[in-house]
Length: 581
Image (cartoon, rainbow, N blue to C red; front, side):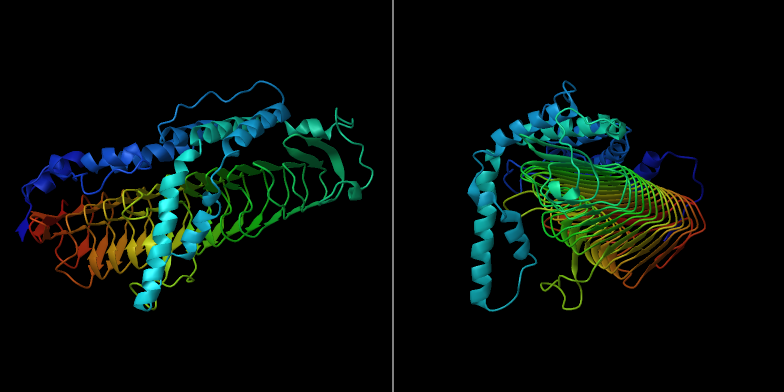
């Protein structure tokens, strides 16, 4: 163990260059081979690019966060669509709001006209088969046969869906929704094409006072007044002008739009509900109020061969879903945006910024002290009998070895937040994908068990980036900046006096040719581990060359299990812990 005598004011890059030099490396050495698997047609180009320059994952995640909070939501969606390599067309602003909905409906009708029947509910079946069960040899063989069949179905039929047309239709629809002036419906006149509704009974599926009603080629449209209304029908468009409302709407044909101006509202649904783009486009915008969203699987901003977007503009809200929920995408785009308020998100699996193959799932929360909770529901039978799969909170996973993962991200702009999970999540990814959790500030608490908090597994990229606050990180292993099997795992904390606690293979650990980094720029920090030999800057030797592990703290009065202030230590062939104070 050596003492560092003097350190000049260096940029972060210079600090990293100097740290790597101690173990005989430079940033150009931090790269992965990309020939371990045939490139399937659903892998995002950015993933191949990051294999050559893994640390570019930081720039990518932070750039996506900036794009996400763009004032023009169509621009944000356009940035997401561009990751697919599609040419985004300018959202059509010609015609009325209803004209543009009709245009979108015709586009979607054409896209889905010849939809392969095999794709219907294929994700539902795959989720039933995951996590993998343990049992007799016969049971496992039967499982593998069915699982392989479902994955083969995706590979064989998914390219028959024209995603480019779907995504451009979603851009047009979002533009129409954002440009709609709902005040026109407050005028005391009966609008062209409206039916004079004298009693609620004349509008099937609604209980309340009706301002406007009309049936279009794309479905039924209803506008409710500012009283307490209830909606339960198969409406294509619901516009509600205020009041404490209740929604339990059936899925409409290809597209659905709900706009609620104000009130403490209740949204309830089962599977495939509430801003679920299941072979279609579903948009929900709630302008104000303390709202409750309760659904099961495939809900609350979910995209499956389609686009599902939920936008809540303010209030202390509560979101509850089960699986594939709260910003989840597979062969589609799922987005949940909550602009402000102290919010609570609960799910069980594949939630809160989750992506599967050819999917992008994003959850963004703007302001408030928020809680992200993953329930202990789906037992991780392969590894443990007392821990549960989460696969959430900025996580992506593919179907190894056939289909690459997608891009799953969770962005929380500020507030004192709680992130609670178990196995897989909090900025993690598995098999040619990227998962990221970016928190903008506040005293945050991250608690999970394994494959979490900046963990990349099997040729993937996992990133947890926290900008500021006195944060607390608790995990067991393969966590807190751990890259396993040709993967990058990175935990980067910019400011604040932070506490890190783990058991093994964490805090800047490279395993099986992976790259693991924990970087803390400032604050008086504490790093505690149980097993010293493979934590806090550890890189093992595997398959004829080394893994890389780096723990790097730039300033502050810090404490370590392995070393101390102004010291560095080496572990393995390419592992280093270094305190630059």
